[in-house]
Image (cartoon, rainbow over all chains, first blue to last red):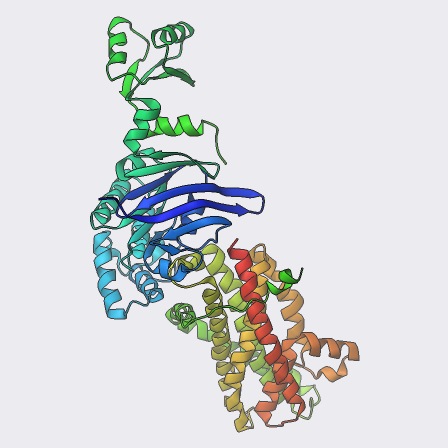
Length: 306
Length: 265
């Protein structure tokens, strides 16, 4: 069965005065999948999110959600989307529970139903005990969970998570990941942005990597790793002689010097590095699995972004 | 060029959802209602005692009224101005910029136009609440002499809506919260003094009188409130009312478009 396209962008472009934030991109998100946008700061991820949930108008191109045009049917689309934004925009004047109730009101959810959902959601994100607490008494992890709960109050078919775990400790991060996985199991389509490669590898069925407003690569995380950086990476301490040797030993490999280390990437199957290491010894040598971060850095470079 | 000007006056598409925003602001207000009721209760007392009885002992009647009876309706009118203007400058700015409340709301089926309209209606409601309390205070002082005063709450909503809309225009263009000092001290404070509040503006140079009548909404609010308090009506009051009926829709629509330009790039 062919998967149903739920979100479709065609030549999507967004300009802010002179800045091209999103530059003529195309992508499709299938119903029920978890789709990730990766990219350095300023790549255009959040701008794309905001166009999907209809708060930023497009400059050019076409964007449809569940077959509806974002430019014309914003209100209908917003009814079926839940948004967990990057920044904390919880209402500090209200308690945890009241935050959910006020939000439910914006979706025209009747009060008894809203109360029921709010209680369920607080249980889901493990905040029942904080029900009557004001927002400023919550830790940042609790706030993120409450924002997630708030995004679910309208029982959305699409959940947008803009950097859902930035700044959280590992416990809080794993809790959020668990919740996202269970939502996906329930059939919710998830679109997230992140610059944590591990997060993308853990959660996403497919990802796109964005840089300077463009999509530079697209695919399943595992496929992208294999395609761009192979299966294993050899890292050794930097040394002129060693570098020369490695170049001759792996003529078709890509060598990169990062700080005081040499990284060797190759398309050859698992085991080639172990063979070399069994014959020669290098200082501080290690073989590790190639990961999405290697892909990311290969495609977007090491230059720092503002 | 023509398009540019009309883009500031596009009619907003509003639905009943406007009241959701109004309701949110009202919920916040009711959480701290005890504190919120203090200023409109206490402030007029100081003015009535200090200016009315104190200064009034030295001042001749103004426009045929004892001094305290002259300033009492002006206190009602100024409370309309202050409560709505500050609600939609500092109050709205904090919600927009610091709390990101507007961002949170527009991710739901509400539009930004509806959010701003809800804010304006809430500002108008603040005017109604505060001025009605002040009205009750001056009534207790025996300074209300006409049953027409019952029209003042309805009128205060209109006045409040205008001041909210003017305030929202400043909120839409202000670079930061400190810059509200400009409209506060260059617009609100002069109005507080020069709108026939504490003395009849007929003693001022004709240029100032004209300026006050053309540019100061408070002048018209004071004139109308005073007339309804003491029950002395004249046909020129219709001009004062017309002034509000023309400017309020103008600034209402303008403020919503300015906010859209600020927030939706």
